[in-house]
Image: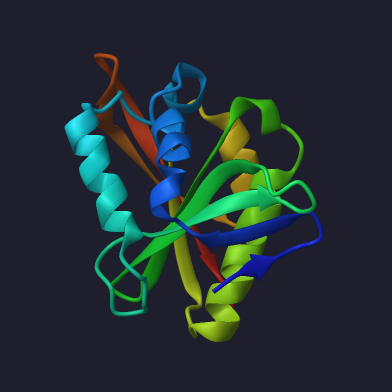
Amino acid sequence: MNIRTARLEMTPLRKDDWPLFQTLHSTEQVIAQCFDPLPDTVLQQKFQQRLAPWHKDADHWQCLVIRQHGSGEAIGVTGMCLSQGRAEVGYLLLPAFYGQGFGTESLQALIQWAATTQDISHFKAVVTEGNTASERVLQKTGFQLAEKVPQAHSIAGKRYADHIYHFDAV
């Protein structure tokens, strides 16, 4: 399964994508507004879970590597996990590719693929309060803020609200 856009190609995560996955989950600039660093054993377990082929009834995250057309350079990951009829989407990009529209382009393509090939029409995304760049990506993609959950989780010992966004592709 490949998803293509004008500038990107998204393909399922493979074993040789471990360095990218590890970098995305340990680079301070990437994770600062998402989560605390994970021990390597936990991160390796998450990686192994995401290697399993994804299908609509799967209870694990689908993980796709985002690559630039032409060069094939991996610039991040995106994916989703389906629960109770709503697909939670997420993405992480390497800092060198921030602010270039890749988050929006990859998310739009993922949603279009899910709606047209998997018959998924309800989506959600959870963003940590203060992560305004990710909120802009979601808003450009058509997501609407549905709920704010105060002090939902902790990053570096500080409590943050979760901003929960919904999008219905109907």
